[in-house]
Amino acid sequence: ETGVTQTPRHLVMGMTNKKSLKCEQHLGHNAMYWYKQSAKKPLELMFVYSLEERVENNSVPSRFSPECPNSSHLFLHLHTLQPEDSALYLCASSQDGQGVGLRQYFGPGTRLTVL
Amino acid sequence: AQSVTQLGSHVSVSEGALVLLRCNYSSSVPPYLFWYVQYPNQGLQLLLKYTTGATLVKGINGFEAEFKKSETSFHLTKPSAHMSDAAEYFCAVSAYNQGGKLIFGQGTELSVKP
Image (cartoon, rainbow over all chains, first blue to last red; front, side, top):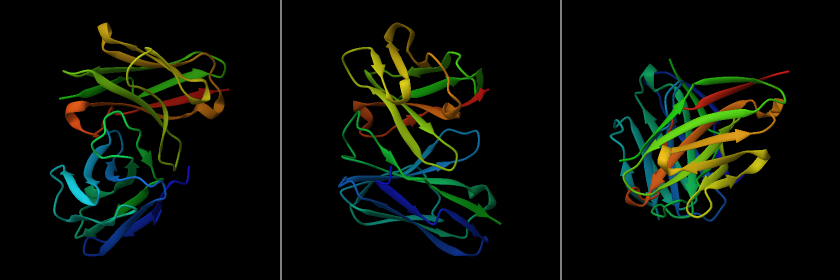
């Protein structure tokens, strides 16, 4: 599926760097999500946006800052990360952020390594 | 609150053998259940989902799952494994009191031996 794209696919950064992850969905959906996938752990929901408004923030550290300028684009701004933040960051979208039983469509992820 | 437990972080089968991946859920309200698959270096793809109605759900690539309320289970099966089925499989649950939020299990890695 190419409905949800993420760039870059790989990112290596130092702890003092500032970088941004980008996600774009071409499905006309109203909700977008950021997940963190670490080895041997369940996917962790980080943020949910519905109609460009943040509706969920799962106690994510402030060094992660999301931005949703419109319903098609989602960013995750990264600043002063820690090595334990190294993970695969997945973006997803769904038709509606409040609709139950709706399928989420995932992007391929950005593999982040923090040195 | 909802939760999901996938029994076995790694399952290995021979090509042509039955695939059985186990998922048990906990939910205080009627659940919606999903199986997603993740191939190496890719995002998650939906295999199948249960919302209401028929408890045996058929998905893509020959997979199916059966919702068993009495056992709080939603196990994934495929009669005959193919090499291309090697991937990580995630069970997930959502419910009307959680909005569109999905709660995922920790995943099961499926290996298929020739």
